[in-house]
Image (tube, rainbow, N blue to C red):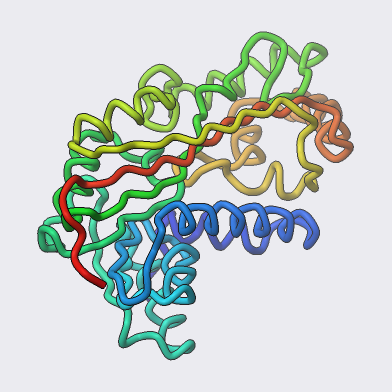
Length: 294
């Protein structure tokens, strides 16, 4: 591999930063989401599955374990595709795997009506042109093919005022406003693809692309946050497009402000003294037509 790109670097950070227990909890949660994506896809033995935004392979390898004939791994990161290819070689499934560097909204390398299932996890939050992406998913599916996806609805989690990321920051309000402004300048909440859609938009996009029927499973929760070490919270960016909190604090706060901010926030993070607002969507759609015989 050449210099690791930001997507691979971010995923590597999630694997290695912080305490083992928090990493394990996060991994178990992701595996649960992966399993539901594949269950909703109703994958049958011998079928071809396109894993869009494959990342570190969890959806695609799960499909191979369930009897998929071929999995096409696609991602914009060549480093992650190389990682998947090496793992496929190690596990003896390279002959059932294909690898394509492609963005979700431009799958031109993939033939029309060549896949039985299109599956993905947390991909559309990074896609500006979601309409083109869904048009591409529809194009590459065979008649009777299924779309199965998972996306967080990040708009639900947004809060303002004296709360930041679910933690009370009243006592360090001015510093918190500087930090919030720093991040919002990078990812404006009203226009960034990570925030500028909700579950109704997803359903409309899928329907307008031609899928029918469509099913949406929406799960929202307001609860105590998962316990995390400060190293994980401050050391790993929430997504690949923004710096980690520790880096942001260095850029926008002076040493005194930074010390007060960390002294206030760190115990709340490590003791779970906050409020977590999450909303996740599992969505499936079918390309009309008669499915091919198994």
